[in-house]
Length: 259
Image 1 (cartoon, rainbow, N blue to C red):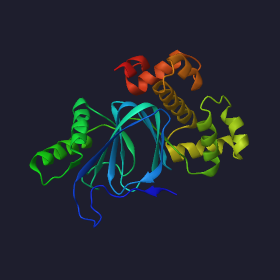
Image 2: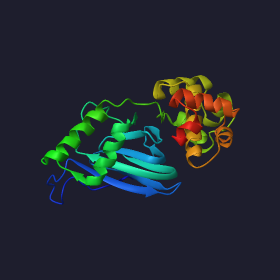
Image 3: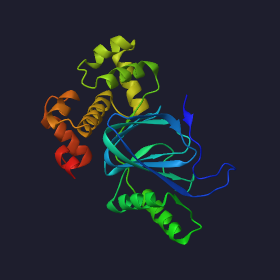
Image 4: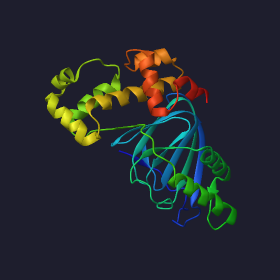
């Protein structure tokens, strides 16, 4: 069962005391925040390290220069890869309008990055204070205009497809064919292909590629070399991993983490 966190924007009587609040914390590699949910909308950002956000709907990997938006009331857990410097902003629900009603990963521009860090210096921001109102307004504009990026992995709902998902999450480098995996889950290959396409909007092959990319990203953040990360994630060669990494993130793994 998810643990609910109390509102940090209202006092114990339910009176609004701020429109935006922040929390800054550093976490060790592999630290896990258990499943919980907040009554506020949440933006999580790491200036260093990689976070992996888990919900019943899917998995979102959040490297530096990206942030994850978590709508109010969404049960979620977070696992750290590498030493993570997390910066979290909590927004009064519906303060930032026009965003999807589910989690997504967004690009963080240099301006948005500095705004997040600046906002964390206040602790709480109230629109009744002119200076703070300006910061809130620019934050809202920057978040609304940020582009989402495909660093997520949807989870199918069907129990048979989920058995395959859970197997591959344990070992993304598992080399068994879909036909072999289907024998262990009690469904035909055709059924599983149909379920993945209908419930994740990806073919099974594309889903598996995305899983391996995200797993490789987590390994790199934990300090693995490119070659080790590529092979442990199930790629046939480091060059295949680098090519997929470049296509999704626009640069090579080495340059990405150096930057």
